[in-house]
Image (cartoon, rainbow, N blue to C red):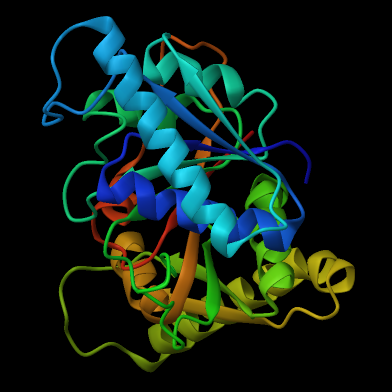
Length: 296
C-alpha cells in the first residue's frame, strides 16, 4: 500500500479520534499522515465569527494542536498538515485518487458527521477512489492521547464478503494487510439468505439440501481465501458463515473487531453514487471503525 493516510480534521471529538486512529495505523503500515482542514466547511457549532480570516485561524489552530499532540506520542510518524479553501468533499475526493486511505470522524449511531455534514460525508464515502474509514469519538477500539487506551478484546479484523471470488479481492487485500500490520486474525464473514420467512418442520431431504448448500459455500469461501492465506502466511483467517440478514450477521461477527471492512462498487461517474443497506447499517451501528473499500 502506498500514498498518505488523509484525515478530515475539524477539531470535533470525532475528527480528533479519527486522527489518532490514522496516526497509529499509518505508523504500523509505515505510511505518512496528512491532516486536512477545510476552513470553508467547518462544523455548524464552531463559535467563530463569519470573517474568513477568523475561520482560517481556527483551522490553523486545530491543525497545529493535533499535530503537536500526535507527534508527542508518535515521534517517528511522518505527519503534515494542510489548510484548504476548497469544499471538504471536493478536497477529500481529489486526494482519494492517490491516498492510501481517507479517515473521517463519525457519531456512530446516526449520520457520519462533523468535518463532513450529512449528505456530504455520504457523498465522499460513495465516491472516494481509495478505502475510507469512519471512526467514532468514543470508540473503544481506538487509543486516544494518554487517557484512552484501546480495548484489549478488540483483536480481529472483520471483513464482509458478499460474493466470494474476484470481486472480493480488494476487500480481502485491505483486510489481510491490516491484520498483518497488527498481528491479529481476520474473520471473513459470509451471510446466507434465509430460504423462507416461515418456520415449520422441514423434511429430512430439505435439511440435507441446506447442509449441502452450506458445505458448498464453505468450499467456495475456502477457495477464495486460499491465495490470501498463501500470501499472508502469518495471518490466521477464520471463516464465518451464518444464515440471516447480512447487516445483522456482520454486526454479530464484529463483536471483537478492531476494524470492520465492507465493500461498495466503483462508479464511473462522480455524479452518481450509492451505498447499499449493509453499508448504511454498518456505518450507523457497528461498534468499531468501519472501512468502506471500493471495488469493481
